[in-house]
Every structure is written in C-alpha cells, then in structure tokens.
Length: 180
Image (cartoon, one colour):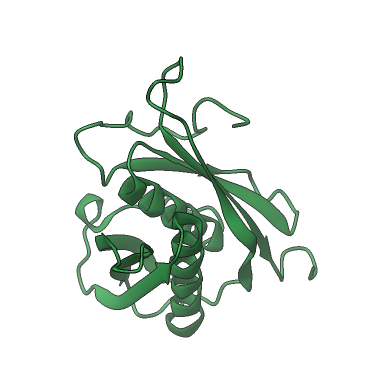
C-alpha cells in the first residue's frame, strides 16, 4: 500500500461488520488514469469498498455514500450482478456492470448498495445489489478498468495491524483534458 490511511475521513474498519470496507483514489489531476485502493477485513467488505471506489472516480471523485447515508427521495434503483472465479474477477465484473449502468442511466446514479455475495458451487463468487439515485444526470467521460484488480491478503498471524485484504484497481477515462 502507498498510504496507511485514505485522504478523506472514513470510520475505522469494524471487525464485526464484514460489509464495511474503505477506499480511496488518487486524484485525476488532469490525467487519464488513476488508481483506486480498497481495504477490508472480509471479502464482502473488499468488494463493496472497491466498487464504491470505482463509482466514485467515475463520478469525477464525488463522494459516494450508501443509501443509508443519503436521503433518496425519488430514487431510482438499477440492479447489478457480478460473478468471477476469484475475488479480483468478481470485483472487475461488478465494477464494469456499474460503469455500464452509469453509461445507460447517467451520473444521477451515485449510491451503491450491495445486497449479497455468495461462494458458488464451482468455487467462484457471485454478488448482487443496486446502483441507486436519480434516473438522470449529466453524461460522464468513458471510464474503464485497466486489467484485472490486484487483490492481496495478509494472514491474521502476520505481525502488524490493519486490514487483512487489499485491492488496487487501475482506471482510465476519456474526455478529461483530451482523450487517452
């Protein structure tokens, strides 16, 4: 990890809530590529943190809140589903699904809700939920993942404190100070 803590204020990880994770992204700062980092103690939290981070950079680094943190009057919910043989593939599939929904429905969809995640019979993973918000909003630049996210796991027996799981995702966009 480049940093020990995200640059914006996030509550600490809660070990008794596997759905909690945290993310941050390097600023676009006129570039067409950035890096999203997610941290969590449980796979579900890592998936949620990673996909929230990708949603955030897709929306030009606006803060992304969960539906519980925001008033969603006149909310529109668009279902999302992802699957993969590894957690990294699940994160990529779910993040690409979110980006596809933004391209279709606009940037008014600015909240992510992950309702469930299961290990499949074949040893892979499946997750589902919603992107929630207004069914309108200005178009956003085309945002894409670069390669497969890199997931690392630290053993609980390793010395040191901090989250057990981390993910790094490279993201590019067009339309920011020219195209890629």
